[in-house]
Image 1 (cartoon, rainbow, N blue to C red):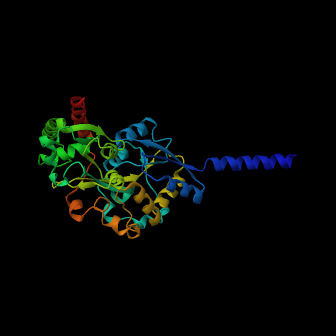
Image 2 (spheres, one colour):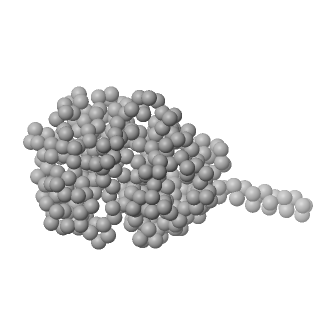
Image 3 (spheres, helix red, strand yellow):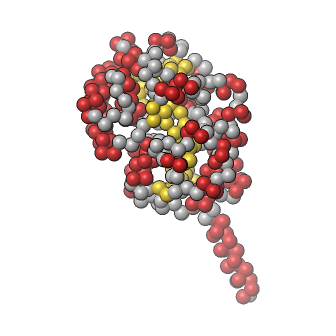
Amino acid sequence: MKKWLTLTATMLISFSSMAQEKVVLYNWADYIPDSVLRSFTKETGIKVEVATFDSNETMFAKLQLVNGKGYDLAVPTTFFIERMKRADLIQPIDKSKLKNFKNLEPTLLNQAYDPENKYSIPYLWGSTAVAVNTDEMDASSITSWKDLWKPEFKDQILLLDDVRDIFLMALKAKGFENNTTNEDEIRQAYEALVELLPNVKLFLSDSPKGPLIQGNVPMGVMWNGETYMAQLELGTVEYVYPSEGVTLWVDSFVIPKGAENVENAHKFIDYVLRADIGKIILEGVGNSTPNRATIPLLSEEMRNNPMVVPPAEVIEKGSFHRDLGEVNAIYEKYWQMLKQAKS
């Protein structure tokens, strides 16, 4: 009897240990194929629990509220990594545990927002430009950000609900830099956006491809991955890179400071960095991949699609957002004023 009880206790401990084998991922909605999650679990025995957010601001606020606890991985965009470091919300990543780190494109590493990639590992990257349904309008009518202000586009434009991406296009149209900390320049960009409002049908960050696919708008300022998915469904979508330059961004894995499954988080990151897994993710999501080992696995059509692999001149003229510290509040002030003016 004692032996049986000892065996039962051992089994319970074992089952309890198995139940704890998980990794909790805090990610953008529809931003990793379910097949990747299933295959990771099948290969490692580690269950992936996914929670989603619709903006970097939402993600940041939630992690602040819980002091970085409850999540093992999060996927912030470029400059939010700086903000999370400053708020002491993330912990260093042990790259010695990432045998597939070598697959990453060097030009996307060691950026100013995270030198030596001490806290972040690129997951996907891309741009924010103009998607056009060519069944509804001529894509050649858009060559510059300034073109969005044309009166013939009244009530026809979708804008991302993203303060920095939308301010970039107004700042570029005014001849300013996207990371300006000059409040007068920010104010001028705000005033330009107010003038644009008659042309804006809606702001949306949750699946902005939807209104384009449904025919509610003929064009939208959106991410390349959303545009790619719309192109797959409609077949009549083009992606225009305005001549002044576009937002470039990298979405990266970070490990929150309060993560409980740090070892499993490293295992998941390394799995995603595999070339074959990168291919599945890219084909399912449609952004650009930082995984140079994945590129040769893609179809020729996908490799030559400028939505998926941006031309060199686009990258050269593109801009990454930087975290602007206290100046963020100035952008947010004008952003809220703009949204109120639209409503």
